[in-house]
Image (cartoon, rainbow over all chains, first blue to last red):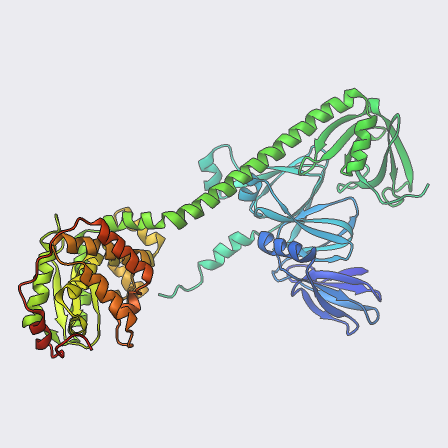
Length: 227
Length: 382
């Protein structure tokens, strides 16, 4: 299985080459085009209860699509719904990543996707919700962001502060605390940041250059209000 | 040596920030890590570190990983172990110097998890209690809101609907039927202590067997109902029921319930004036309001008590209801909104037996004349 990101930038697409018999699971609706040798199946990843918890707890889709090269080798073109970059990770069987609920685009069959509950403070204040996706296993993992993706590499004990709602994915070897952006409550909110996540390494943290909630609020002001 | 699936991540200056996957083994003297061939430029190699050089702690996102740190030849190394079997083997083999702080860290992790479980249970419990509270306490909240709405305002609300309805009907202004209804009403309202309502009862010419009440004290009785009644006590029974819908403010309760929780809260907090506007917005028509089962029962029982206080024979109420329920000819509208179940009749009978016995006082009018003035055939209902 090979992947190549086409048109990198705001509107990328990823081409995944599948050998005969190989398959990839992708978010429902992610496929743009594919070779005629590819069969598209719908699958409830993690069984019915797993799919149900993913749907209701993380807001992810109930079904994933499985793209299988059952009638010979072929390629699949995948793209996310929102404008933003695609990042390719190679899971080695030990590294695990937490992914915010809209961040998953596609993954090799060996990649396991679970929904996991966060602590009350993280759920309330991290901007990612109470339930997030945990990616483990082995194989290629494709994530997408809103805006550009920036990778932060943290050494053991190294800290970095990320504004909530800008998180895409982070290693489970990292840890983070939610805290006020500034020392005072008023200044925290008047600064426009509110709460931030203080990450501590080692591990990787992928952040997105745009905040979907903030963008939504900005768009909302231009939507005409009917009486 | 064949490398099987890696089970740990090693961090250090020469490794990538995501960590180098390696196969960790617990041995008698310490830990041995075998790195995958592509993990570093040097190819596959092993590295051992004795327990004496290690410091351990709990780490990772959920504090569920064993973190071992030591000073390597090329700088500090940190190993993250997540595999439960490996952690168990480490705890068994490691000297007390390492396991004691590890147990302490594990205890802290357990406490954090326990705390998290308690917080979630508390939040879940609070949510459940709120839902149950709203479910069972909504009636209480509605009553609280209704209590804050002044009677004058309620009258204004009912008045407009009342006049709108009467404008489209043939109203009886005088005659034996109007006089009879007026007498019945006065007999009953005179016994209500502190009555805030000025009742306005209108007799409408229609064959429909019905009567209804609007908020504020407006009651309409159709001549069809009077024609159907065998005696004046039966009509008085229906009137007593309708009067009590007004007195118990049932119409207002239904409105507030239909407007919803936000309206209720705003009324409780003092914004009664906005209710009319909100009602118009939501298109709630007073004429189409249906009373609930509990309200019907309340109006029955309080109606029965009112009849008793006014020394009007309450049996008329029960027999009229029962008779009409048995004889549904499709035109008895009163029973489409007031279902007469046997349980309801039983309740009324039980209430009647509880009331002290007394001699009823007859009305001054002759019911046969009243019915005759409406064109009803003599000798009872058809």
